[in-house]
Length: 407
Image 1 (cartoon, rainbow, N blue to C red):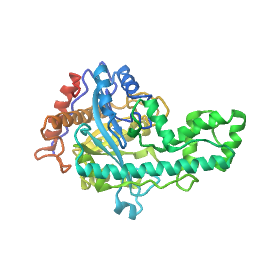
Image 2: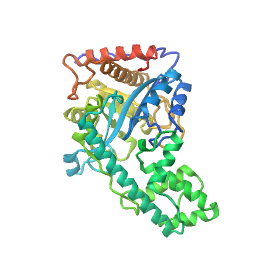
Image 3: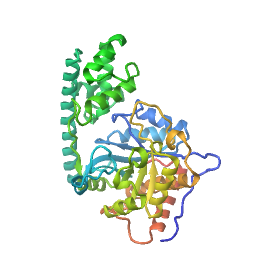
Image 4: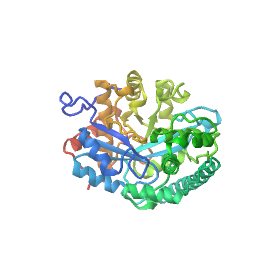
């Protein structure tokens, strides 16, 4: 294989940061942002030229995302995130990129077409996933309500009321909302703070948790503790999450016209998940699964870890991207950085920007009715891998330079 040929960020010397973020969650997903416009405005203020949404379950907010991006001069990338299970890995007890659940694999789709009419296969897979998640949210809400009631706090919350509140705050129809754990934790934290004053809150939380709380007044910290103390495996409000099979998740991404991409956790957990502990072995395993793109959330990782994984993947002919998620209450910067706000190396920034350009190129070529970076089978087309990456990166870079936004 020839050596990688990278597309450097435009005006890299004048703007040394990474001008692309390919993974944020937009409301009505749980998000640090108030709404889509808030997210795009935050990106534009930081000089982010490319923003990629990676929502769970429902992509209809992407039309609004497109309009906000057009107004702000930010190029939107469309993605989705799924939770799947690789059955052989689950049976073997191998942790993939979820440290708590062997065999569980988060999987992303990059450069999907959210405006196309879903195929029957896409409708079937999506309907099964959505129904399972809504049933889980309803059950967890009931269990949380019962747990707080046993602690002497009657909270008049239902999953339908929580979904309506999420929709109202995001300014979207309620049927676009599929509740996540963080939505429930936030709703119960807010209701608790309204019902119980600070002086009595510690005692009520201790009764609910079965142990003294670590946080009482910090809203975000209490939300996190409600999840960790009540909603995780073995806790009173835990309900098993129903994940898609890996095959269904992979094919759903392809049905939407996207590039299957693996979100890498690396040293975001300790010890490292065995599936990805060795970067070179990780690449081999991903190729075996038909995955030719990887993504990092670098703020979880040490700078040297980011370099190691980015370069291992890219040297093996994969594209690599980076994001921030923004799926907690914290208003962190939109520009991806390594753990502790450490800057990414120049070489890593170039690779990550190149990956964003490839996704933009794939998205544009597919929208024009031409073949994308990967085909309907998830595999790159024939020919030299580096030449293919270069071609799509150039297409995408030109679109980004022109701030070209899909109609």
